[in-house]
Length: 87
Image (cartoon, rainbow, N blue to C red; front, side, top):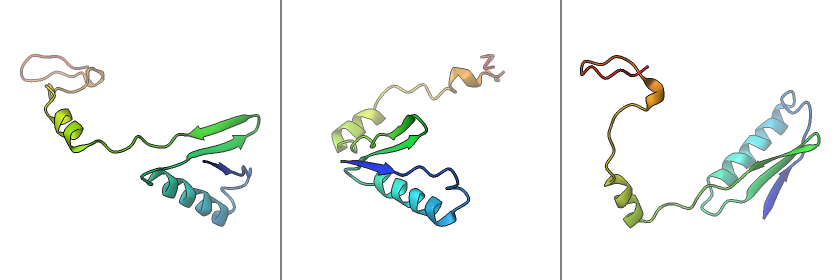
């Protein structure tokens, strides 16, 4: 099932319509079995896909057992006490 929003240019000026759109997005994105959300904007369509289903207990436990380095992502490089540079 796909949920379609009606595009209104002044939706930000019409608080009730904006609140209604926000409510629908929040309700759909927090469902266990959410629907795809689409909205036509001009000649394009915005698509919000439903979230992945929750992980099983076994998969979740496995993800926490992975060998994480606990180091910052390389995009956040800076000087550290150990001499490793992260810029």
